[in-house]
Length: 244
Image (cartoon, rainbow, N blue to C red):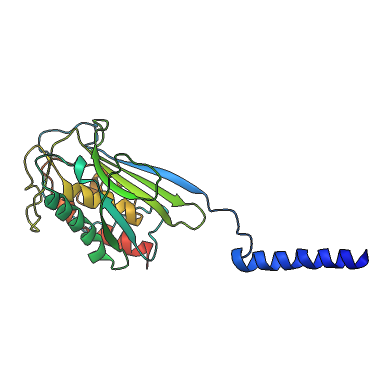
């Protein structure tokens, strides 16, 4: 009987050791994931007005807000749903606008890495393992909406989706550094709005004080506006504060 018990005990120990080798130790509980939603408003009153854009007068304000997360060291891979784009824009125009927006943040801080993962068929923002960029109808009080899922304990970005509101007209005009309000009249510029939205990806919050109106992370956007394509002092200081 004692030999049998010893044999069974030996089997149990062997099984445990084999299981440990193949699966490793029991992992701790998964880090909680939370969602935060950013709505980019047309103006303080919630509705766009006819081309109210004003040229930059002071983008040296050093204001910024931290949202509470940062991107992974390896960066993020994004995918664009070109099938949802406005008909007046080509795939290449949308791609150029989006990639230029990301490049603006990478230029300010090379640790912010964005990889183009090609097209996607995702039609709505959801926690599905894909960092999606798409166009979809939404409330008239929103130009664009960014959904950020992040790990609470580690403060690391888990996933992010950005939705451009399809009820509005969109365009793309290259920014030359001086044409702050040189976009197509009565349309929102993809790169201009995208640069603001992707500031949330890197971990920056919205700013709503009128003194911050010339910063990219100012929470309101205008038609024909292009000035958000270029980061202000606070935007640059903020992104470099996240990952010093």
